[in-house]
Image (cartoon, rainbow, N blue to C red; front, side, top):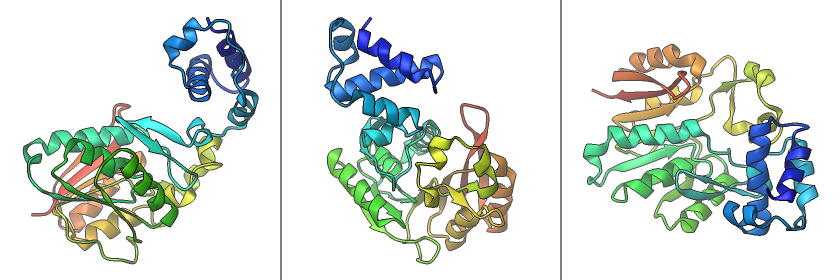
Length: 271
């Protein structure tokens, strides 16, 4: 085994379980050396790369590795990140997979698709990557997030338009499909969350008022800008989200569980 990798694991065990410390150790070494895991395994006599102890210290303080190195690999994309953008989650990759399966018969159509609350652009870019004929637009209230999303479009050679816009105050453009992973965590849930999320990820992209947790879903649904909606939702608010969509006259509303068995996605259609 690589002795430097063993050293990293020994340090990280102060905060992380064994499996996570192992995974992080290889991630850190690949980033700092530019070598693959296979190359690192063969290099048993390597010395510690520059900056290693600083990275370990930041990880031990709870800073996500994706922010330390300012990017992540997700759904076949290399995405730049900043503190203005959420780290893409496995659940959101499941949302992409569901949208693609559900719209397989529409893949050759030149549909207009809008990603509301695009952040790093992960949803919009992942859809465009597989559905090149679709006209995909991503919107976000954060100018810094849109700047990152535009950079990611160029970085991954994908033709997606990104626009600064606040869905709470600006009308959505007419479109065929809306996909959205908006803020949905109630403020009261903050206390039970990981410090690495609460301390480092953008609160405007995470939290909604306890008194109105469906604020973004209702605002999107009420505008009737698309005939087909795909939402990632708060696992505790599945039935409430469905009831809201029924009250807004959507039909064929499906509540879908993620791979952890939690209510995570809703698809709804207008008559």
